[in-house]
Length: 146
Ligand code: V0V
Ligand code: CO
Image (cartoon, rainbow, N blue to C red; front, side, top):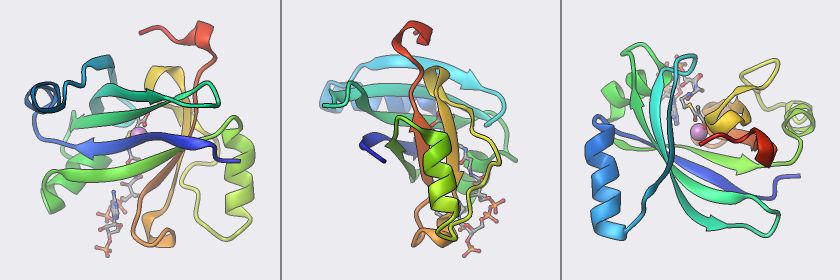
C-alpha cells in the first residue's frame, strides 16, 4: 500500500540559507521549488534517490509564507527541524480510507494538492506516536512540470 519514503519535511526559517547548507555540505541540488499558498509554504525538493516503484525520495525544505500556517506555528513553538515524514503510494485515496478505518485521524476528507502536482493528505501526529505523517501520490510523469 505504501511503497517508499516520498520525502522528509524539514521546517526552516530561511529557505535560501537552508538550501545552501544542503548544497555546500552534502552536494544536494534543488530538483524543484514552488510556493503552495493553501499550505502556506515556500518549498524546495532535493532529490535523494530514485526508487524501485518508479518514484523517488526527496528532502522537502519548508519555509512558512505566513505565521498562522502549520509550519509557521510549528517553527514558533519548536524551532527548525524535522516537521513530517511522507510515504508514497500509488493510491492516496485508498490508503487514506484504509488508515481512517483503523481509527487514525486523516486530516482531509479529500486529498489536496502537494508538491509537483502530487495529491496529499496528512494523519494526525497524536494518532501516530508524535509523527505528523503525510501520504502522497505523485503526479503522472507528463503532469509534472518542474
Ligand atoms: C503539531 N504537533 C505536532 C506537529 N504539529 N507533532 C508532531 N509533528 C508536528 N509537525 C502537535 C503539537 O505539539 C500539539 O501537541 C498538537 O500536535 C496540536 O498542535 P498545535 O500546535 O495546536 O497545532 P494545530 O492542532 O493547529 O495543527 C497541527 C496539525 C497541523 C498537525 C493539525 O499542523 C496540520 O494541519 N498539518 C498538516 C498540514 C501541514 O503540515 N502542511 C505543511 C506542509 P501538544 O502540545 O498538544 O501535546 S505542506 C507539504 O508537506 C506539502 C505541500 C507537500 O508535501 O507537498
Ligand atoms: Co510534505
